[in-house]
Length: 359
Image (cartoon, rainbow, N blue to C red):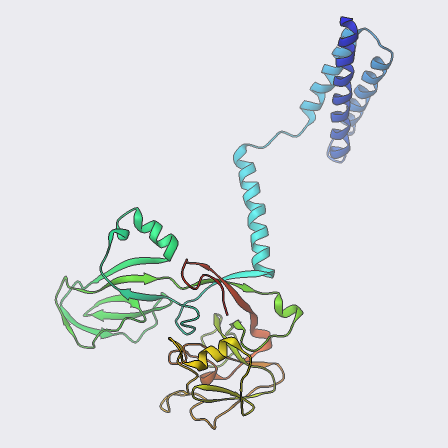
């Protein structure tokens, strides 16, 4: 009876070892030397013959152990755990990069041209609180995207605006004497105001711009529509810094005449209808100011209600929702079709009343 159960267990072992050996040969035949392949296949046949002939049980056990050892030595060695982690990370990164390149791209709103629909870097003047102590402030930033800043001058003198581009998007350069400092663009100082050394001239919370996802595939399957929030490249557009991305609302489509009779947007001489975002802007409710002409003293196109932007077959017009503070198509004109990247549809960070789907 004992021999019966031993044979029964041994046959299961033989079947399992033979299966592993055949899998090894099938998967690595092109990588193994022919003598190694022959060695494994001969060992498989010898074990199967011994098992079928019901040779001495110790002989079958020995051949089973020999084949199992052979499979183990010829199987590729498992990489160190760190190599496996790196391998998984590389694959995940490759998938993420492909997803970003072809489908949905993250984008940070740098300026306030789309406020109050989307916010760029902005500030709120206030004193520090318990949420600004070490440890807690990291959690505050992770949720709200805000961090507390305090600007203290090093030397006495007058506050002066500096006519140079800040290296930090959404910031402006000011100085006292030779000391320069970056301040959020929405902070205003009185030119020539005298300050003392060590004086704090501004303190408050600085909020990072809204982080959004841009749908890059939608315009491959459907035409761009009026009222969509559009992201486009500035390359080749005269009057704009080159090689960067802008985000505005699409207000003009190909072969149209775009004009403004404040607070209304006019297309071919008629008011726009059935566009949620444009109608909200024209309502002048809350922080929406309506569509405005640019100041006569500024260089641009739409200075009077008679001025028009005329689009070609593959041209679009973009305007910001914050028309009192948006450098948009009113100044420099149209956006070519080839410059369109996609439409923004979701604010994913930080957590605010704007979090989620956007219109």
